[in-house]
Length: 141
Image (cartoon, rainbow, N blue to C red; front, side):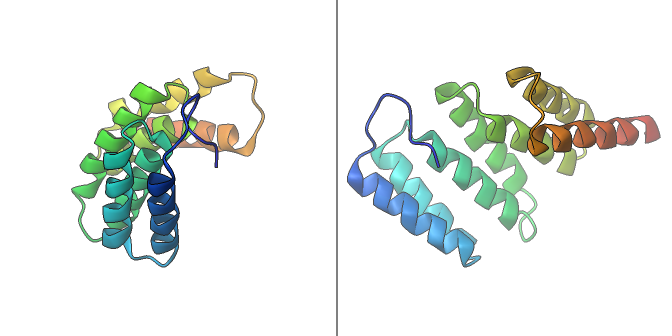
């Protein structure tokens, strides 16, 4: 996982981040969210922790659907620090899709392709498929 640009992450924040990652892998979402939050409180520019907290909230949305809205806030904060974050943009689009806000989802997913338009990586192919799925939902309305 990349480290935040130009600044050194305090060791305490990084250790909390690593602990949160382990908790997330164990599907202990509430505890993982808590540890990501603690890491962010120590180092507010920790966009990786914001992204991972958002992803964890998306996982937890299976239990608490409102976590999708909370996740969007994390990804938006991450984008303020790291505007080229494919993960944050795509995840916002996915959250809006889950919430049934297909126009917003489509806009965010299309932004993903602007980050690196010539990219042939699997995530771009997946994004193109997500765009098509979102368009289908919009047409079905």
